[in-house]
Length: 282
Image 1 (cartoon, rainbow, N blue to C red):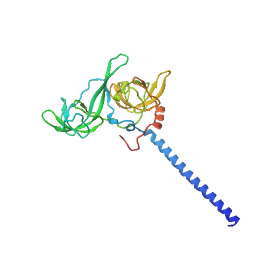
Image 2: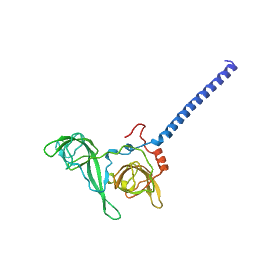
Image 3: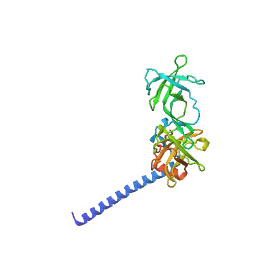
Image 4: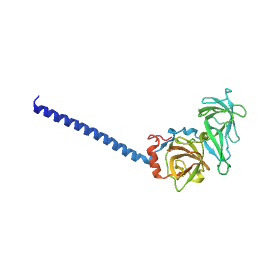
C-alpha cells in the first residue's frame, strides 16, 4: 500500500471513530436530558412507596380510647389453636353488627399498654393487625362462618374484628403547615430501638394538625437539636397517628420528638426514598 493510501485510511479511521464517539455521546446526553425532564415534570406527583419499607396492611395503630369491635373469633373450624390464611373460623358478632356474607374485617389484638413517661398515666394501647377475614354468613344461632383471607401473624380465638381501611402503600408527601411537633409514643411490636423501616405511633393525631402524607423530621436534642431522620404519616386518628421511618442516620428511641418538615425536606427525601412507579396508585 502506498504512503498516500495509508494516510487516507488512517484519516478515515480517525473520522469514523470520532463520529461514532460523538454520536454515542449525543445519544447518552439526549437520554439523560429526557430522563431529567421526566423526573422534573413528575416530581410534583411523586409518591413514596411504603410497601418497600413495611407491609402497609399490617401497621396497626395506637388506640387512645375505648375500642368498639365488630366481633370476636370464637374458634377455628378444625379445632386448631393457631389460625392462618385459608382457615375457616367461627365469629361472634357484637350488637349492631350483622352476619353479612362477603363483608371483610381486620383481625386485631391488643399487644401492649403505652404509658406517658412523665406522668405514668396510660396513654393508650397498641393494636396489632393480624390479618383479614371475610364472613360467609350465619352458622348456628349466634355465630358467623368466616374465611381467613390474609394472615400477617398467627391468629387465635379471642382476637377481635375491626372494620378498617388499610392505608395506601403509595403516599404523596406533603409539608406541614405551621410549627407542628409530636412525640413518638410507641412502635409496632413495641420495639425500643428504632431506625429506618420502623413503624411508629405518634402521640397526637388530627387534633394536633397531623395529616396523611405529612413528612416530619426526627430530632435529636443532645447536645444540640439536629435532624437524624424523616418519617411519613400513613394514617391519622383523632389522638394518634401511624408513620413509617423512611430515612434515618442513627438509631433512636420512643418519646423522641418529631417536627413538621418543609418542602426542602420533601425534595431531599424524594431523592433518597423508594418511590412508586408511574401509574401505581396503591
